[in-house]
Image (cartoon, rainbow, N blue to C red; front, side, top):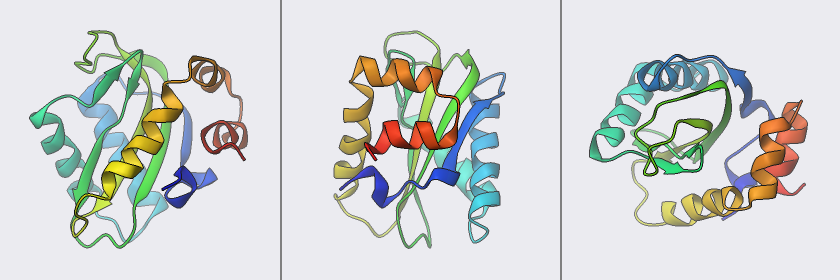
Amino acid sequence: MEITDFLTPDRILLDMRSRDKPQMIGDIARQFGRLVPTLNPEAVEAALLAREQLGSTGLGAGFALPHARIEGLDDYLGLFVRLAKPVEFDAIDGKPIQLVFVLLIPSETTTSHVAALAAISRRFRDTARVTSLRKARTQAESFGLLTDL
């Protein structure tokens, strides 16, 4: 599975302002609702917060990969967010996060979501790519860095 299977250039937000983790998740849920009118932002927010209760999706080095299963979703949906200022996220390294890739997963999916999560996390292990994502000026530039297009 490739990132282009679930990410489009319009689902990239640069320099979003959130003061903390709960506000950020709510902001992201509302953004999904604006971009995909069939999604219920409250359901997305509840699902993402419930997943965080199982354990933080903050993977360290300033990156988080929140993900959740969404009832009635037909396809995977991704959203990349770069925060204007890092926020505390209970990441495994204890550091705040600034780069966030959110993945919404159809509830009927069994294990294929692991391939999607792996495709995302591979991108964020490349320190040069991460540095470039922190400096990217446009959605198109960020999309290119995330997808190699």
